Image 1 (cartoon, rainbow, N blue to C red):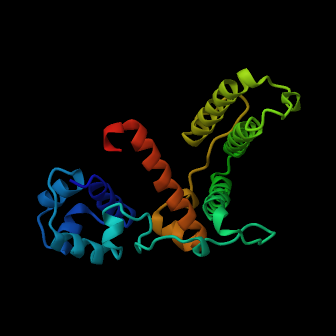
Image 2: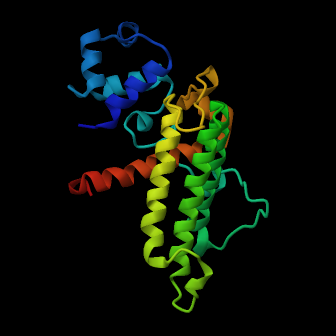
Image 3: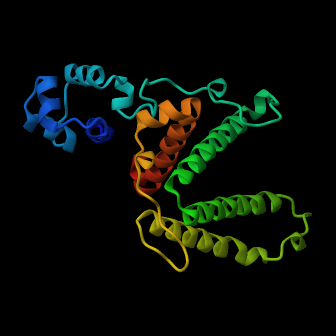
Length: 235
């Protein structure tokens, strides 16, 4: 049974503010059956899949979790807006790195825009620190690739840097999450709940155009990695 379908049809219905009773009537099934589909208790047939895709104006691939894009398209390098001021093209051998770089850069731009909408300096500060620490950790990995690189470049010893920086990232994440949940820590602040912070797939695609594709693909790729670690038998 596809595990993404129940989650996605339930999410689409709720994002659009449609009651389960109305959606079931529009789709020509009972509310009880739709409830079973949304909970993953029963698996729908191809006819209902196509009908649901038409109803929510999305692709079947999106409903099945095969694509993070509602339209079901596959993202290519040229589909991603170029945010690098240099605008330099890359050699074919570096295409994968360039593709991932564009995904990350565009996703980060969307992320910071969304953070600003929360009105929380705490979330902005902690998110910024978290991302800088992530870059720091990976820079040290690359630095270690050549044994001739002098570790005196850093003030924090190599043997402790990875673990301590991971701990610092966890603290940043916890502080940001607390602010997002309305919990004040120290002299920090909290997020302000407004319509601007209501996030849906449709709203992201409308406001951020091509950059939203980068974020949606980053989320899908990240969750695939997480699920692989959580359920190693599914590799």
